[in-house]
Image (cartoon, rainbow, N blue to C red):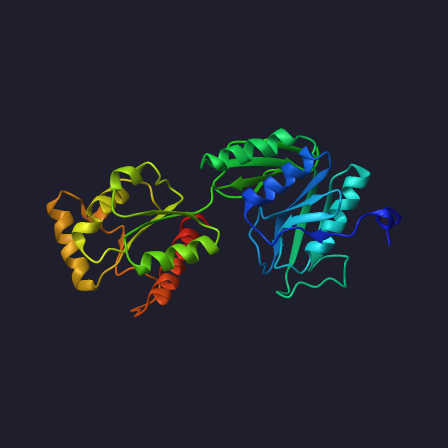
Length: 306
C-alpha cells in the first residue's frame, strides 16, 4: 500500500446523486468550508461503461465524495486516488478495469475506464459553472493534463478530447413542463420530481409558460380536450423544447393536426408533437401513463443530447 494512503481518511459517500449541479455544489461547499477538493473526470472508455464521458466525482479532503464515474464499482477506489492526489498536491491519471494495473478491481461490464483527477485550485471556476446552470445556461470546463490546469471554455458539442484538452460539458437540469388539471398530471409530476427533473405545472396558461421553456425542456400536455391545451401547445411549438407530447388517441391527434393546420402551423411544426404521448401504450391508469411519458422524455433527451 502507498505510504501516503495510511494516514488518509476513509472515503465515504456523501450523497447518491449523479446530477452535475449537485456534484459541483458539493465541491464548492467543501472549498468554502476551508477544505480541499479534487474533481475526478471520466476521460476514456474502453468497451462498455455505465457512465458517459465527462461524468464526475467530487472528493473532499475529509474523505466525503459525491458523484459517479461508473456504476458504483470503482468510486471508492477513485476517491482513494483523489485523496492521495490532494495529499501530494498533484493531479493524476488512473485506469480501472481493462488495461488497468489494478487487477483486483474488475468492471462488471468487462470494459475499462480512465479517470483524470484534478486538484481544484480555483473555486471561482466551479462557482461560475454553477451560476450558469442555475441560470439554465450551458457551461464548460477544459482540462489540460500536461499543465494540470482547469479553465472556463466555450461549450463544445459534447464532452471529450479536443486535441490535448479534455472538454467537460455541463447542461442545465432537464425541465418538464406539464399542462393539465387531472390525476395524470399529479402522477407525471411525482415521477419527474423523483427522477431529479425540474418540474413546472400549469393549468393551461401558455403565455406565462413560454418564458420557462428552453432547449432543455420537455412539454407534456395532459388535457382531455383540445381547447384546454391550445395556449400551451402554441407556446410549446413556438419554443426550442426538445420534446412536445400530447395526450389523446390517434383520432384525437388527427383533429389536433387539422386545427393547427387551419391556424397556420406548418407540417414540420405539427410533426414535432408526439401523439399519442408516451413510450408505450395504450395505458389504462395514471401510474402507467406517467412511466410511459417519462420514459419517452428520457429517450428524447438521450437522442437530442446524448
